Length: 271
Image (cartoon, rainbow, N blue to C red):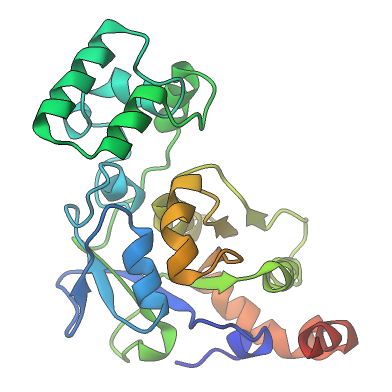
């Protein structure tokens, strides 16, 4: 299907339809790589991609895609839970167990950049305790199939039902979608910018919102690590704006009568 909203805000890339499936889509490409963002960008450029719980190299991808339990599985990360908590915060170089894991990874030929970040820490949260609290607060969702599919919205088939729609937006477009998400609702917090990995802001958080009485939009691509993968492939100016299907339909219906058809927005688009 075509989106009048996408046309009104002059998107450079097609919105993505995102949904769970029981089988891989016909003609789809299985996602590969170390980060979910890489195949997501491929979908934004026209491909149909799909993920399973083991598609990507990142140990957190399955959780971020809702294909595994949100609780941390110590078997999926070198050194287990404590090393992971330190990895996201202060690093593993200052305690003996962490140093031992570093030496093991060196012998196993693990990429040097990962060993460096494992040792020094990514510094995304101040303490390991805050990381533990963060991982314990991840929402739980029940996937509707073992695969998650991402494809351009206009390629959505008649027998496919999207659960989410993701827009790739610059600052002006992000502003417009934020205003429109609040246009027909009371309150002023119908858009969230949660802390989390890139895959969480594409899938886990938005699907969790889709089950709420008043689902909100999720702004994503705030993950610094994910932006490293996204910069060259998509562009440095882009953020993601993901909406549950119900909110997408609401925004599509409201777009023609809203500010998008009026002077201020038209002037921005002309420039």
